[in-house]
View 1 (cartoon, rainbow, N blue to C red):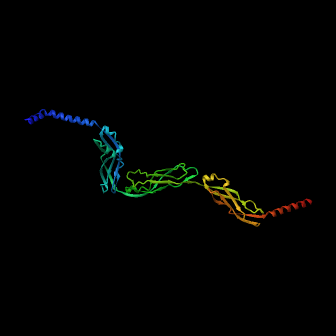
View 2 (view 1 turned 180 degrees about the horizontal axis):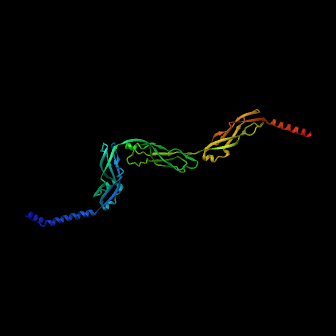
View 3 (view 1 turned 90 degrees about the vertical axis):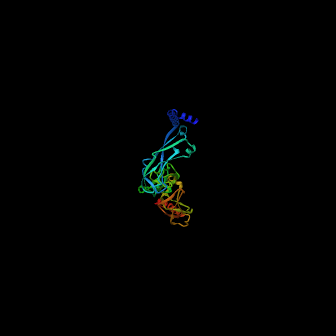
Amino acid sequence: MNTKRLLEKLINKWPVKASCFVIACFVYFFHQVSLLETRTFSVPLEVRSEGNMIPVSGLEKEKYIKVKVRTRKEQISLISESDFFAYVDISSRTKEGSWTFPVTVGTSEKVIELDLDPLEITASPDNLKFDIQKKAIKQVPVISKVYGTPAHGYKALSVQLDPSHVFLAGPQFMLDEINSVQAGSINIENSEIPVSKVIKVVNTNAYISILDNPSIKAQVPVVPEEMVKELNDVEVKLNSLAEDFAITSEAKKVNLIIEGSVIDIEKFRTKSLSVYSDLSFITEPGVYKVPVIVELSPAYTLDYCSLEEVEITVVKKEDIVTDDNSKQEEQPAGDSL
């Protein structure tokens, strides 16, 4: 009896009750919707391939994927663009051709730890079409630009790179057109010492990848710049002649060319130079050819000397005195005439 009465109550005015239930559901739904907020992020697209296939077209169309995120208003501010990544995995295909692949959106550990509820994530577009081919590999040299001017008196030598070559992976027809790759530049402005820097290869081709993408150790040797200087009519000093001897020949002069760094050459003074012949071995009068000795400060080297030896005439001092006396004796005789 009670059951019958309950059923009568339930079906009594059931259209009205059903309408109220539906309205209540709509109210609840829209209330929940009003608590949600949507935000759209632009996320770089990554193409993953664990096999021998790589894309040869399509990347230029979709470099970024729009990721739409929907969650509660109080939670939306806790996430940012960096919390999401998008990729297409072409590893499943082993034949060349044109294929369509789904776009997958992943989240960072932070989003997982936040345990956002509800959380809706959609990608636009959600699939992409690529032409794929077999991957080729090529080794090419690395080049780096050096700019700036070393300090005065210094010069830069050729840049040294380690490693000097890298391996590229990509479509064969694209690799055939690549003979070298550019790495970061090096500034040597006003430098007096070698400049070292760790640089990376610059890759602007989305279809080409750098295997291992190593860090390049770059060094530009900066060394003193060399310069030459001419010294003309430098007198050869005659040293260490015994006291009882004298030299009757004319003084000898030589021309020299010396070399040193620009800084040292600019500071050169005559006290840094000694040009002489050692006569200490002479024990008898006569005509001698003696070596010319050039001594320089350690900062300089001798490139050229116009004479390797000089000829001198050595006499005894007493002979010179005798000749003078003879002239003096002859003079009165002349006056008497």
